[in-house]
Image (cartoon, one colour):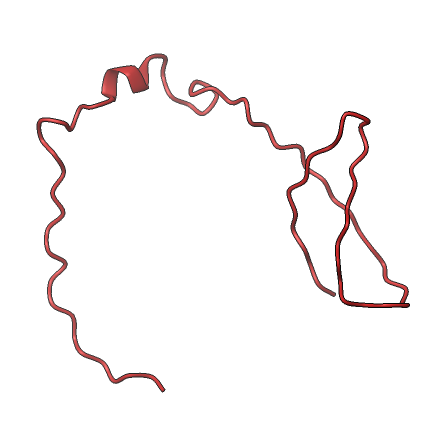
Length: 81
């Protein structure tokens, strides 16, 4: 059994069309389709942010940029062949 995950758009006719090349010919297969609607219109408040969060915090690190310190020296390991 193999699993293939696709993201497709349902047409104006309300029908989902799937064309999946499997490399198998003249053989019966069992197919299971599970679908989940993707919501793309979530607002920041839908995601748990308070109103105006991004407007108030955008650019807040402009005068004090985040500096990433050195990660240090790492041990040298043998090359895997």
